[in-house]
Amino acid sequence: MARTGPIIIIDDDKDDRDLLAEVFASLEVINKLKFFESCTDAYTYLKTTRDKPFIIFSDINVPGMSGAELKRLINQDPALRRKSIPYIFLSTTTNHAAVLESYENLSQGFFSKPNDFKALVHMVEMILNYWKIARHPNADLL
Figure 1 (cartoon, rainbow, N blue to C red):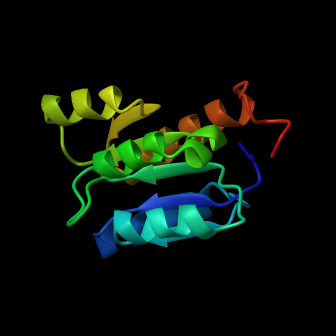
Figure 2: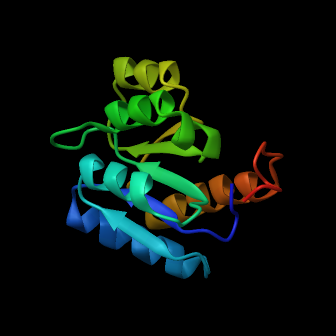
Figure 3: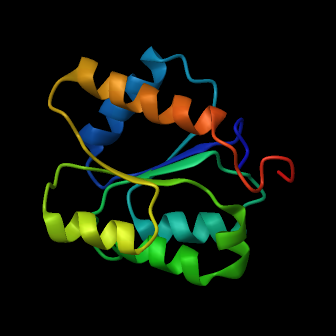
């Protein structure tokens, strides 16, 4: 995990992407933000980039390939799995089946998007701070 690498954000809703951009700006995050409207585009990026992403924030309900399907593909790809990029679901859904599926696919967290901007900022800040200090198998390799 490259703590200075880009932060991947996958969400098909432009308003949510804009809101997350505001959240990261308010936190003065220095990592480059890479936004994707589809999991297919994010997967292509992950397969072809030389970037070493810090973390992935993904909606679970994305048209076409879902966030859960993308996480499953990452798990099945030895090169991507070995990068151990933290995969966090950030979604409006509170459906128990979606939460269960995300953890069955070995996601590192599932969070419901709060309606309050300050609460969202606080949530994202806590997630980022956790991954900044967490021990990671690839911390010295990337």
